[in-house]
Image (tube, rainbow, N blue to C red; front, top):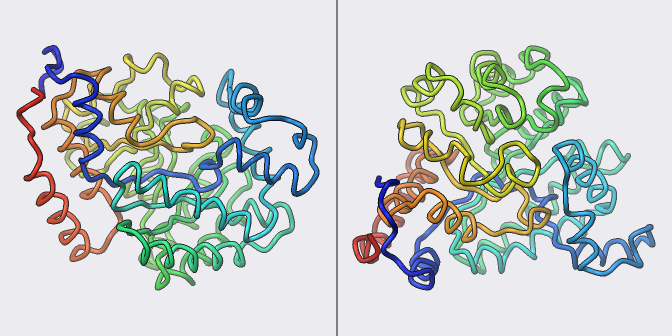
Length: 355
């Protein structure tokens, strides 16, 4: 990795290389994938107060955030517009072209049934609709899909246990993990210890949002108290050298989301994000969009942003793409098969032509 060198690839050449590079995305919230146009369709369908807005106003006002709390408020507004299983299914259908444009071959989609339950809707019906639509999408395209069911931290362990039980019930249909999202400062991780011990006992992977706006201690709690197999965001780990060593030694990856971190104020500006430091220290890191619609980004943009901000070489970028496969929650044999597919395609690319 050569962060001190000037890149020798022109921007069009870089974009073409990144387009050709196979990718996996491990941190993509389905609800947050909503684009302004789709949001307006729902606003008009349900005749909400946003029905008279246009796409530019949604993008320029609702999808702009002064801080993390403002983002959570906008996320709540989006979720209030997702009222029926077909609303969720439409978001997944929108992602089909996204996966194709960005050459995403594998994705772990995060969905939160507790949001539907919170609004007295049928969270299980939402999940069933998504799993069915996901199977159709996989048959049509090149992408493989798996699902992580997210718990909302501020809604407590009872809601989380309900989510865990739903995740267990649909493991054979493609659910691979139980997540913990929301406001990481709202409720201590210890309150969820029993829920995630139960999830691990039922062979569910554990994915925890931590170290995004909370400190390194939140990452430690995710690891030691909840048994996290992967950390959502985790950028604050860069403030703790012992934690970075632990993540490296135990191969616990961080889902880094550059645009998201800058948009919410978790870490600004992008070129000061500790992604490079973490990568250099050997911490497993991947690139992701988090909420591509709400942050108005795509995975190609995240790779290009990383390349320009940290002067990554093509070898670096290919390494990060392969790390995404290594850090996935796929079973070993499936993971190795996907890794081979990625390596075969990467071998066909010119990794030295652009520096």
